[in-house]
Image 1 (cartoon, rainbow, N blue to C red):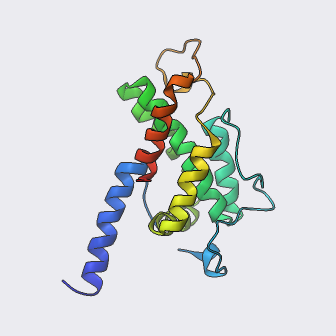
Image 2 (cartoon, rainbow, N blue to C red):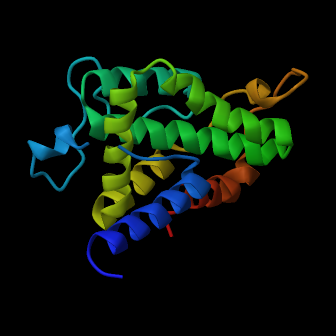
Image 3 (cartoon, rainbow, N blue to C red):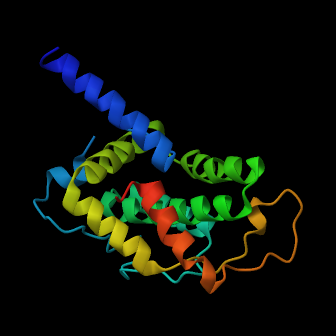
Length: 187
């Protein structure tokens, strides 16, 4: 195999790995086409501009803000929000350890994407793919997500039966970093 078949086979393999690790997929790169920056650029208008979020950020709020960044074509910031929210839901699903929680992880992202057009989702997936294939940008995303910290929000949104949902405990710090590494394929 040479040329296009190898490219498509490689792309398909990477997409499969991305789906397994990030529970994600692909699509055009209008945001980065106009920039040559090696650093992630964050949105300045409809997206928050602070570099990190508090660990108490609820995943649904982060996903809603991600959508605003996608609509504004601020894809670099949207990728960070996607990575942070997804890492939070992945960590929460692993802490609970039920099939329902694992399904809730995917459902959160699916509900967020349902609010976007097919074209927006396609463009965003392409930007996620390009970011995660660039070792420098991937490393930066992994570092920023870890720096944002282990979530402190209630995990009740992942339970079939709602309870008083205790936030993450300090002893779970190693699980947080392992969840980020696993979800974003950082290592």
